[in-house]
Length: 473
Image (cartoon, rainbow, N blue to C red; front, side, top):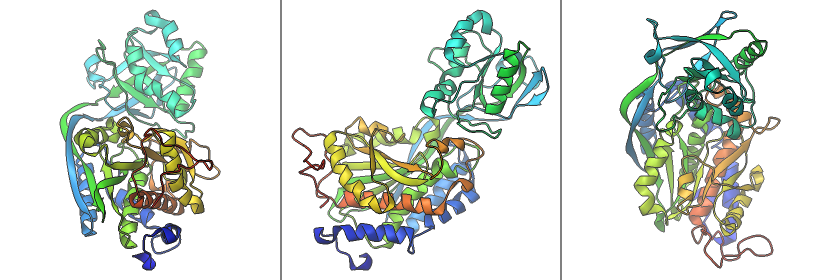
């Protein structure tokens, strides 16, 4: 054991302090950042369905196997693939201007509706700020035109509906394409991609792409002056047929209750822009480094700590859903907690936690161990895209909460799904603290006397707000 530590109640706290010190000030510091930089500089972006992603997965499997103390395997799943292809957009009236753009995931291309040899379409535009404005224009004002959405940013959770639903809503009124303002609070002329979804049974599927905030506002200003806004759009994206990818599963087997699990996870795929260093390279590598940290320190948990690196998250939680369907019957009553990071690895401030008051009261005891790095905040939520589905089966889940000092809460979305998602976003010291959070939480729960409560009747909180009948050891 690291430093001669033995896992007993009398010296419970010292080992967690030692983990934090080892990762933030000792031999473990800087490793997550260094390993992530080496990885993304070698493999770059990793869209699901590409050979680049599969090569990256094989590389990580080899890395994990080389540690010698983990049981490592992959789990395959199939899906309907999508490919981007050549794409461009140009404002042709009232002036000529190239419009930086990115096709949205699952979008059809322009060729089917094109009369041009290059497969492009050209049409006048209507520019709207909301679905209400779209509805007021109706078929008479929209048919045969390109709809440009210049929705205001009101937080990602609110504004993302224009990206996901905008094409379907416009198609119902006869639009020939949809251009959506990138869902970001800040822009320097870079489009942000993401998934869009066609409504089932939609008679006509139209092309959908994201454009920059600046260009959406430009076209809106021109449109409101009464001038014609006309765009030429070429998108050669479309179905890539049935494809396959793999989740990575690596177990640090428990010494006493190996059949019971604490899961740490992130997703290893990314969009095909930038490096995917933030979304979700940082989360995946902090989770992975936390397991490596326990190995380096010689800490053997009582329960198994399982690392899962999901694939296909960006294209509809493909790997997360496949993992759930494969293991829900087997594991739903054996997992104490699942901790994911998919909202940035800036400075950790705490985590979310699903479940009952009893669950959260017990889990707060664990988060309190992170007081030295200021990460004790608990927010009730089922967040965590790859693991939310487990909460429906009663498994407590959480998402790492992080914030960069001096930046707004939605700083993550400055870079999200854009060319700006590069290693430059990451900070070594912040990543170290995220690793420490993963390692402390996972070990504490793996060594606890019982699994986290799932809201069983009779569980109650004491005067101090902590669950009276659940303790760490």
